[in-house]
Structure formats: structure tokens, C-alpha cells
Length: 217
Image 1: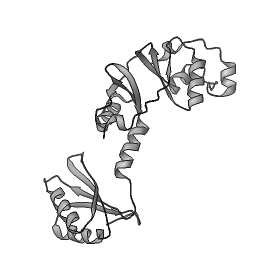
Image 2: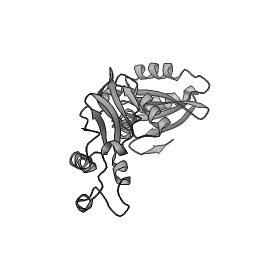
Image 3: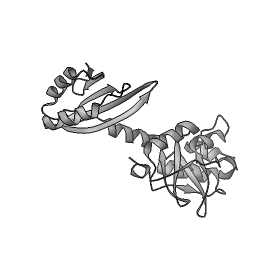
Image 4: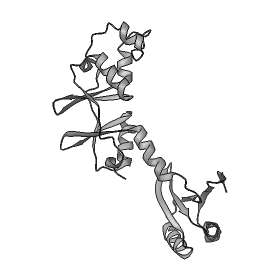
């Protein structure tokens, strides 16, 4: 899974000399929370809905009709934008995008190719990517293993899935505290027999989630 698979390519941009009202109208029309600030083909910064709200007096909601009509704020986008834009390339892995957002405490990354703007990826896009990876399907079982002791769980799964004519939908490994874990999703008519083989195998299983019952065993 790479950034290019989940980013938005249709990016709304704005000039650094544009007024805040213009920014408000662009965000309201497109129902978005961020604008990339561009001067020609150069990325100058990024401005968020929160940046605009904080530029107004506390008693005015600039995103309400009345707020726009009442505004006397004459600032430009350039005066409130964040000039330090964190970028990523579209061929980078999706987990690297999540790592960058966490490290910089931001909700989006500007995607570039050869220094040019090609898209934007947000925390919602990241959430959608990982939700899709772990999403339930009819009849699928999700099994979490503890691989801290370097167990060869994948070999066991591949053999069992083939023997029982099942489908291994996904296999994801990750670290939690000092433990190395893996989550596998398996689907097929004989998935119950796989669970029986699993208990007999002696592998370290954290839990088994059956989606139809939403219960762990």
C-alpha cells in the first residue's frame, strides 16, 4: 500500500495574496478543511480551517453566513498560513505517511513528484487505508498471533489454508510495546477446522475474532 493509492489528486489551492474570505468560500464550497498555498508551480504553504478561525475575534464564526458578512479582517492567506510544509512522494509506503503525521503532529501531507504538487493525503485517508486492510468480510475470521518468540506462523497458515481450501485475505505484522504481533484474516467454508488446527498447533494466539458474533475466544 502506497500513498498514491489513497491520496486525493484533485487538490484545492489558493494564492498567498488571496483574502481570508476567499479561503473561507473555497473551503465552504468544497467542504474541505485545508488549502495548499501556491504561487505559480511553487508550494508556499498550507492553510487550515482552524488557522482561519483563529484569525477572527472569538465571537465571530467566519464559516457562518453572518460571520463572513460581519468580517473586517483584512489579512491575507500568506499572513496565517503554515510555511513549513511536510511533503511525501506518492510511491512512499502508507505507513511512512502515518509516521510523518504522528512525528510532526499534523493531519495531512502534501504529495509531490519532482518538486511539483500532485496531491494531498490526510489522516482520514490513512484511516481509510488501514480500515480497508483489517475490515471484516462475511465468514472471515481475524486471528492475532504473538510472534515475539519468532514463531513461524505464516508457514503454518499457508499450509493449513491450502489443505482446507481457504483464502488468506491478509497478514499484517506490527510491534506493540515489546511484543511483535501479527493479524491474519482467513475466509472459507472450513474456517472452523482451521481454528481447531490452530489450537492444536500450540502457536501463541492472542485472540480469535469471529465477525458474525463480534466476540473473542
